[in-house]
Image 1 (cartoon, rainbow, N blue to C red):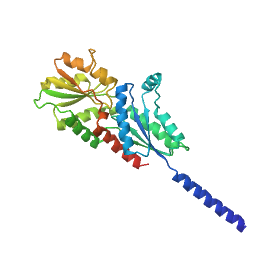
Image 2 (cartoon, rainbow, N blue to C red):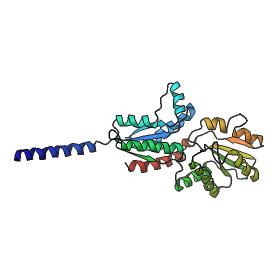
Image 3 (spheres, rainbow, N blue to C red):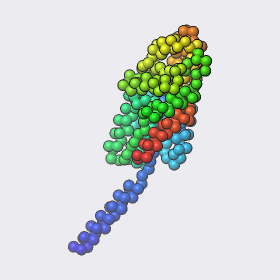
Amino acid sequence: MKRLLLICIIATFCLAMGTQAENNLEKKGILLITFGTSYPEARKTFDHVDSIFKKQWPDVDVRWAYTASFIRQKLEGQGIHVDSPTEALAKMGEAGCTHVAVQSLHFIPGAEFHDVLKTVGSFNRIHWGIKKTTIGGPLISKHQDMQQMANFICKTFPAADNKKEAVLLMGHGSHHAANVYYPAFQYYLEERSPDHFIGTVEGYPLLDEVTRKLDAGGYQKIKLVPFMSVAGNHAQNDMAGDQQDSWKSQLEAKGYQVEIVMKGLADYDEVVQIWIDHLKEAFDAL
C-alpha cells in the first residue's frame, strides 16, 4: 500500500514537472496584417515598416499577412506568395509559436479590422499550437492617435504662409460605421490648421464635399497627400492619375494648381511609431 502511494506521489510530481516545463516553453511571435499592395514600389514601404518592427523586437519571429484576397491572387500570378491572416497564424502555430501579438496596419477600425479581430480571436479557442493571441489597434484608434497624426500631418505637410495653398489628404473611406473616423480627424486638423482637409475615395467626405470648402477658402494651390500606408493604386490612379475623374484632374479643371506628394505615410518613422506603440501594449499583454 505504501509502495502504491509512493508511486502515485512520484507520478503526480513528474506530471506537474512536465506541465511546468511545457508552460515554460513559450515562443512569442508577431504578425503584421495589412490590406496589401501589388505595386513593387509601394511594397518597398512595407520593407521599411518590417525593418522598424524587427529592430524593436530583434529576437521575435515577425511575419506578414494581407487581408485583400484579390491582391494575394494577383501576386500569386507573379510568383509571389503572401499569406492570408488565417494561413499566417496557422503556420506560426505549426512553427511552435504559442503566443502571437498581431498588429493591424489599417488606418481605421473598419470592416477589415473587425474581420481580423474575429480571425485572431478564433485562435484563442484552439487547443493546440497557439495558446494566446492579442491585437494592436489601427493607426487612428483613439484620441491620442488622432492628436499625434494631426500634429505630424501639419508639421510634415505645411501649407504655404500666404494662405493661398491648402493641403488635401486622400483617405480610402469605408461603408462601415467606422468611416466617422475621417470627419473626426478633420476636427483634429482644424484645431491646428484651417488649411488642412481630408476627403475619401469611397466614404465621407467625398471630393465634392471638400471642394466646396476649398472654393470658399479662395485657395489657388492644392497639395495632394495620400492618407494611406502606401502610395499604391488609389494614390497612383484615383489621386494623381491623368484620367478625367482623378482628384488631380478634377482640381485642375477647376483652375487649381496641384502638387502631388507620392509617398505613403508608412514611409515616415513617426507614423510607424504609432503602430509600434500599439503593438507594445499587445505584446506586453501576452
